[in-house]
Length: 84
Image (cartoon, rainbow, N blue to C red; front, side):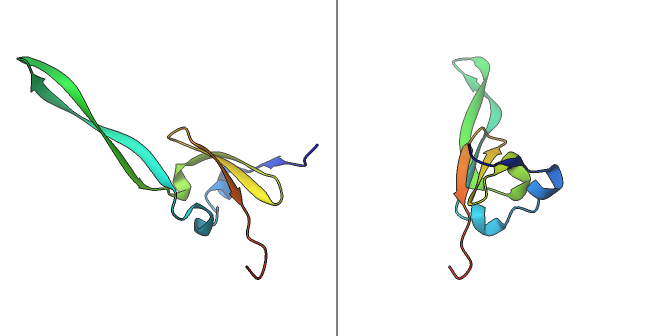
């Protein structure tokens, strides 16, 4: 069985930005529009760069970290070895 530990909230904020570089956070903006004489919501999907603050949970497995983001993604991030 793998050794794992859950990261504390202050450790999550300290996730190395290099681990999440290039990852995207998905969200949607909504606005009220008139369609066929009725008011309705229109959703526009958007994405932006993932920030450490978007991480809501994580586990450290030694050679990798598994994170869960506020938009529902579960990502496995491998740690770089020294000298890489």
